[in-house]
Image 1 (cartoon, rainbow, N blue to C red):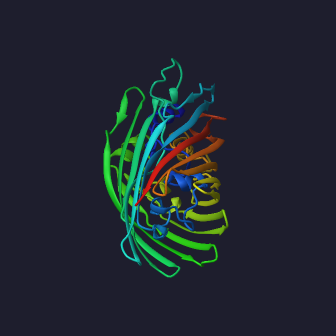
Image 2 (cartoon, rainbow, N blue to C red; image 1 turned 90 degrees about the vertical axis):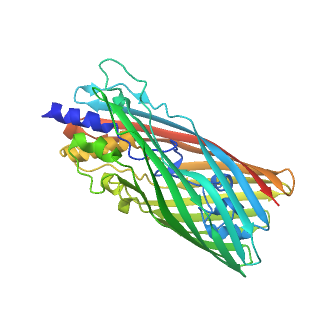
Image 3 (cartoon, rainbow, N blue to C red; image 1 turned 180 degrees about the vertical axis):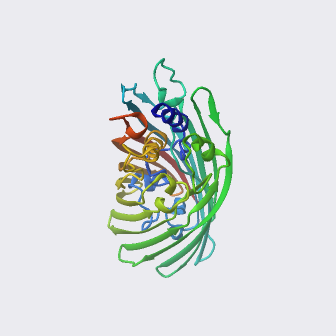
Length: 406
C-alpha cells in the first residue's frame, strides 16, 4: 500500500501550480512591488506616489505627474531554493533549483490631460515562482522527480484618474496574460504541454493630500480568473485528488490602505494590504492562507538625488496541512506546496536610490534581499514514519529603471 501511494506521489509531486518568470522576492507569488522606486522602499505605494509606476500600487497616485512621464526597466531576480525529501529509509540527496536567475520587465506611462484628468498605460511582469530540477539524475535518488514548472504572468493596465483639490480617485481595467507549463519525470515524461489564457480584472484607487505633508491612500484590486487547460488536472490525476476548481488558477483579490508623511527632505511611508489567497480558485484547493502584508519605507532627497530604505513582512501563504502523518491527502498537499511552489518568503529588506541627470531624465535603482526561510512538513502518511520534506528559500533582486519627463 505504501509503495502504491509513493508511486502516485512521485508522479504528482512534480506539479508546481504557480510559478512565474520564475519570480521570487514576493508576498505569496506576487512581487512586493513592480516599480523600482517602490521596491527600494519596501513596496510602499498605496499612500505615496511614485509617478508613472504607481498604476498597480494605487492608480490614483498618477495624479502627481505634471506633464508626461514614462518609466521603463526591469528586475533581475535571483532565487535560491533547496529541497530535501526524507523517507522512512532516511534522507534523500538535497538539490538546489536551477531556476536561479530571471529577468522581469516593466514599462509605465502617465499623462496629465487637463487640470483634473490623468491617463496612463503600462505593462508589467507581476507574479509567480518556480523550480527546475531537470538536470539531476543521481542513481538511487528521487532527484526531486526532475520537476520543471513555469508560469508567466504579465498585466496590462490603462489607469484613468480624476483629481479635485486634494482628492484623487481612479479606475484601471487590467488584462492579464498567463502561460503555464508543467512537466516531470517518473518512469517517463508526464505533462500536458503549454497552456495559455487571458483574464480580466480592475483596480479602484483613491488618495487624499492634506497639504500638510500627509497623504492617505486606499486601493482595491479584483481577482483575475485564469484557466490553464489540462495542466492541473493532468498533474494531480495520479493522486486520485479531485480539484473542485479543475484547471482554474485565480490571482486573488487584494485591498489595502497606506499613508506617507513628508517632512522637509524626509518622507516616511507605511502600507497595509490583505491578499485573499484562501478564497482564490486553485490556491484555496491547496490550502493557501490569506496574507497580511506590512511595508515600511523611508526616503531622503537632496538636490538631484534620493536615497530609499524599506522593510516588507508577510507570513508565508503556504502553510502545513494538518494530519500529514495520518492523511495521504494532507501529506500530498504538504509535498505539493513545499516542493512544488515554495512561496515561503516572509521578510524583505530593501535599499534604493535615484539620480537625476537633468530635470527630465533620471535613473532609479533598488536592491531587495530576503533572508533564508526553512520549512519542514510532515509527509509520513505517504512515505512512512518520520518522513518529511524540507525546503530552504532565500532570494535577492536588483531593479533598474529609466524615467523621462516631458
